[in-house]
Image 1: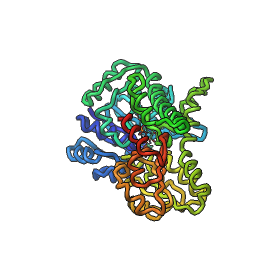
Image 2 (image 1 turned 90 degrees about the vertical axis):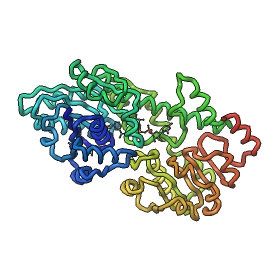
Image 3 (image 1 turned 135 degrees about the horizontal axis):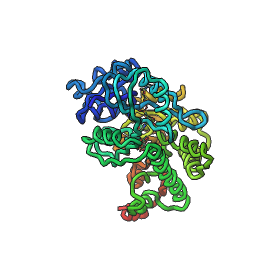
Image 4 (image 1 turned 180 degrees about the vertical axis):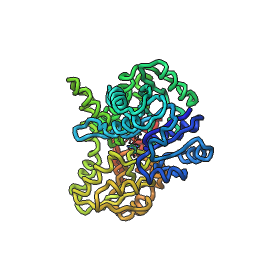
Length: 448
Ligand SMILES: NC(=O)c1ccc[n+]([C@@H]2O[C@H](COP(=O)([O-])OP(=O)(O)OC[C@H]3O[C@@H](n4cnc5c(N)ncnc54)[C@H](O)[C@@H]3O)[C@@H](O)[C@H]2O)c1
Ligand SMILES: O=c1ccn([C@@H]2O[C@H](COP(=O)(O)OP(=O)(O)O[C@H]3O[C@H](CO)[C@@H](O)[C@H](O)[C@H]3O)[C@@H](O)[C@H]2O)c(=O)[nH]1
């Protein structure tokens, strides 16, 4: 089928590339000329494992094209996917201006009957808003249908998720349109769930809000564990064995970040508020997350008192591993606070350094390796659980740092290893330093 995808960010590019991989002829459209020039050469503007390989192959096989020109991209397209951003406005609600512009682009440039599919995360009812804008601006006598098809990919594993997702949600009022979009997705081999448009739009927000709730919940439990001397890892494992709870998204840490959970939780609070419903639970989830992002600063202050002139190394900047995305990364908040408190901050990330330079405060020192970050630091914070950090030779901390103090926001190391390497190790929700080895032994046995 001939398909156009508007917007080539994390969602649009992965959608376009994987649709071409499953046999469609896809043109991706973006207004960013520099990005489009790169993509035409098979270079991905984002770091996403496996993406560039698929891109190159499908460009070579003439299944995948890129353009900045909407008319050229829409020419003869039977399906148009909208995948532009819906960022957060100051009041927390979703900014629909990019979507609205695309609706006008579509109305003015389509040359045949088409199905318009919304991949972007949009507030309940937005697809009808898009339909109205297209109708009002149509220049030719053309028929179109709208379908909501929210996206559930995770950054860092987006290509894997495209072929291994749990479900594809299709929301439509017109059965024929829903059936065509189901056929478009056939070769992904993923179960399809069909529903109406508003429910599909809500499924997306409700899913993200639920996952964010799980994270804030486990973070609160971890804070209580710390105070009581229980161990969050064992607690999460024991909870997760109950199939009704499930073991995923129970990793305690420094709170959720990224381009989705922070904005979508706030948008859902607004969506509820617009119909006079106060979403109290979700407000709590957001508040807990904001508090959790400060937890490592509290631990540092408990240890050092004042942070002025302390050299703090930071390992990990991206909001999660395997991505270069810095949007709403907890590292931004933490580093800002460290600088405010007069600390000297040295940071390192295996992939996200360049995107980090665009958003971090001036005054941050950028290191090019783990060793350089550790060297003569008074303490090291771990903010992203990259494999490179989990595999660090633990003896390096003592060798390179002024004093081997590690405050780990992602529970990357086992307590025994830290103790054996003389690391003064603070982590999340676990019993901390100087624990007697026999106590640790019995703990690791019980977790096993
Ligand atoms: N990032 C994710 O992991 C993820 C996952 C699921 C859903 N979503 C949702 O998908 C949507 C897109 O997110 P993203 O992270 O891919 O966004 P992004 O900001 O990375 O990319 C958006 C792209 O759209 C382009 N664009 C803007 N206006 C345009 C126009 N008129 N014509 C053509 N291109 C235009 C921009 O130049 C940019 O390249 C959002 O609604 C988001 O909430 C994101
Ligand atoms: O147990 C966990 C799991 C995640 N996180 C944090 O939560 C954030 C989001 O992680 P993840 O969900 O893996 O990444 P995203 O790429 O943001 O994906 C989420 O947001 C996307 C955009 O809507 C959705 O499509 C995905 O289904 C949804 O998982 C990150 O900061 C993680 O560190 C935790 O703190 N603990």
